[in-house]
Amino acid sequence: MKQKILFALSLLLGLMFVNAGLNKFFNYMPIPDDLPQSMIELMTALMQVSWLLPLVAIIEIIGGVLFMIPRYRALGAIVLIPILTGITLINLTAAPSGLPLVIALLAIECWVIFENRNKYLVMVK
Image 1 (cartoon, rainbow, N blue to C red):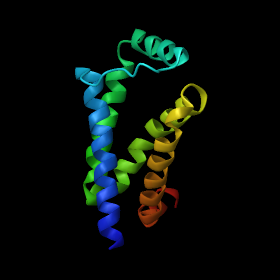
Image 2: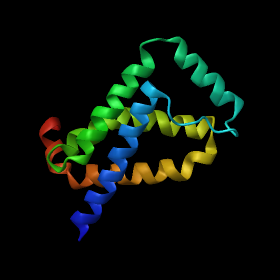
Image 3: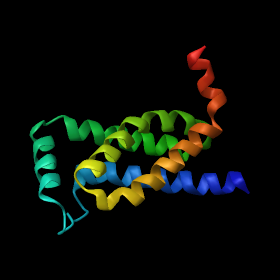
């Protein structure tokens, strides 16, 4: 039962990241009306660096796909750590209304890392 729940949550998290990455390329999700001004300024600044958002999008898509596949979930979790760190910091500083979702994403990420801890021990030996 635990594995089925973990698979379902991993599938949802992976799909969220794939969707977020694809949105950076195709801009199909509308920008919320209540977005704080500091967040708009931050996104405008990030768009000035022409290679940054496509790089983040590619990492989100690759990490999301890896996270959905049970065999590669541990690798996907490692790939998504910098993205989740950035999302957490942005929500802590600019848009605290998104913190409940970020906490849920971090909980799933931590659960996957904990479940795959034996795979990571090889890296630190």
